[in-house]
Image 1 (tube, helix red, strand yellow):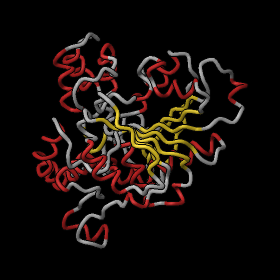
Image 2: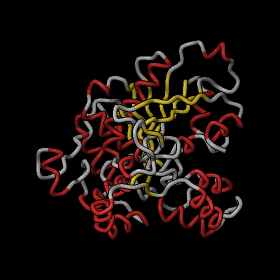
Image 3: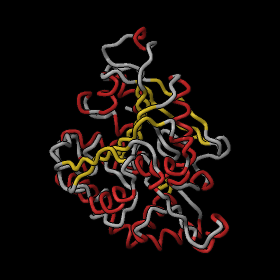
Image 4: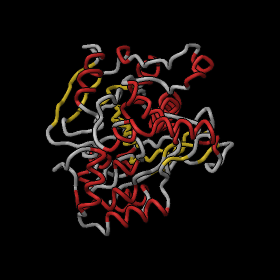
Length: 350
């Protein structure tokens, strides 16, 4: 089942709304306008808007595939919110473009810089326009926090649309990541960069029949499989009591949801630099930025009220990065709470 079918299966209304970006991507937003026990008449009443944004290689499925009491999208809807769930360019729900097919390299010429400066503002404007609200609450996970740190710190007019920013597994610098992604970042960046130089940007880990078959092969039919579990935990951190292990196969059926190779290279660059930078074009930086090095995002300029949620068992949003960079950089007037959670790995926040 896809996300609209899953939402319908659990007894909620789902609307799919498309937002076209200025550079031609059609982004799919999944909206749950009211709770399970509400009526369409209730939906005509003004409701606060909450916007949920997935992380790297994720999609709107990240917020909807658990049972209703364990999925953020349904919990917010039943609590009286108008729920909007974003899908950035290049994932399985946002594969359309005004000019390019997703089989063309030009479609994949993007990194999270473009998601931050174009996709997030486009989707949020659409959500506010349709819901007729002036601002919303933003909940991001992983890369979904990075794009808000980036855009919110550089565009103060945009920032006024955000009532509060709730950052789950917050990521900016990734100097201290651990596990499999640390190895990939340190060993493959030079090769991946050369591939892009030679052949252009392409899709990385698409959601297709082959990835689904691999997930089935590794994870089986739904019972906890040690091999499957170990792969997940080598990426995100040790097992967490807050992950519903009986649903791992369902998670794997929707992840990875796809992104560009250029985006993966961007993240790998930052594992090496230890900085929260824009994409590094090397000798072409002067052409793109007017300077020899890739500019850093200055999150000290973020004015949105921000709430952080992080854990020592999260190998991708390591406390050394969260406390040593994000908390150190954010103004006291911006950082409202920093919640150091218990045993949470990177995938336990949805």
